[in-house]
Amino acid sequence: MSSKKTQKPAVIIMKRELKAYFTSPIAYIVTGLFLIITGILFFTTFFLQNRAELRVFFGNLPILLSFFVPALTMRIFAEERRVGSIETLMTLPVTEADVVTGKYFASLLGTLIMLAPTLFYVVTAEIFGSPDYGPIIGGYLGAIFLCASYTAIGIFATSITKNQIIAFFTGFIICIILTMIDSFLIFLPAKIVNVLSYISANAHFNSISRGIIDTRDLLYFISLSALFFAMTVKTQQKARN
Image 1: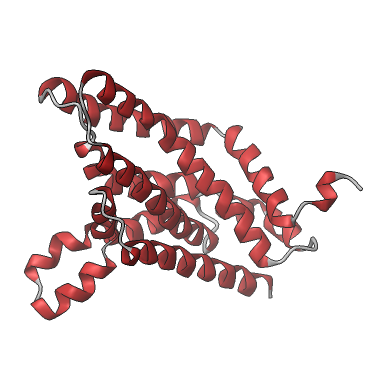
Image 2: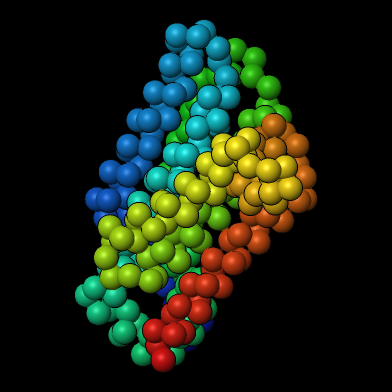
């Protein structure tokens, strides 16, 4: 029996999506733009403010990921719906959960690959300064959880439409609301602030990026990812029926 036959359907789908990811120009364009913008943020701080640190980089990361993660995920389901290949895929002996799992983890790996080159900023900070590694480790840990959550949102957004542009803007709007909601808390009554502050992805990310590992922050991101993952599975089940 070949190894391919013994592999779980989700793994086969994940490998298929990763292959499509690396052959797609969109992935390289999005990753390139992300690195250009983050590079400007880091080196502006480095050269103009003479600070070898990643505080500005991490401070802007939730907003950047709100834009770039949906850009990476927008084609995952939408393109297959447009060309009709999703119907062919669903006729195979796979469950909706298999399909969503494979596409989700392929997309998550894609976002982490986009993030990985920014480790060069850590090397630069180490060479020219003495960075505090607590916030750096916390920042990257928070970024992984943020990528996981925003990828789940992006996958959900692309599962409900055939149009990639609509998928992108749907994912972007949900992500940016979760990122920016704490910016408007000062205009709201105190009773509402406590509820909305917990909804804020930016607040939980900032907590982790300070090097404070709180299980409530981790639970938030895990729950957010699970919620949109489950919604995507439900969407695929409805589409199959």
